[in-house]
Length: 74
Image (cartoon, rainbow, N blue to C red; front, side):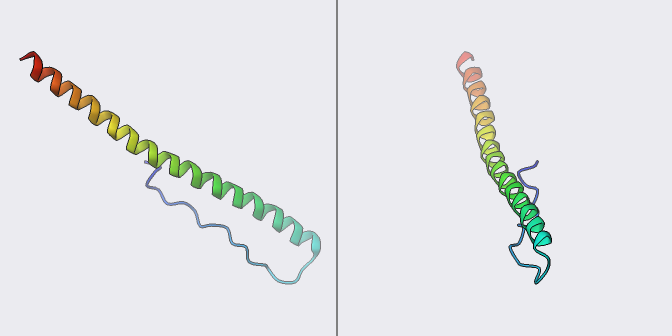
């Protein structure tokens, strides 16, 4: 189910304008953390989508083997 949920918006790199250096550094640090979280969520989302496809193929293969086995025994 998580494979189809939308990701949050990508954090922006826009400057907030002139301000104190300490505030700008703090915002930059949290911006880097937000960017890392976004990239991490994006990576897991891609992996989740890939594993959904693999799981569907695995289930289809199991069903196909069950059908073939039943037809061979009859």
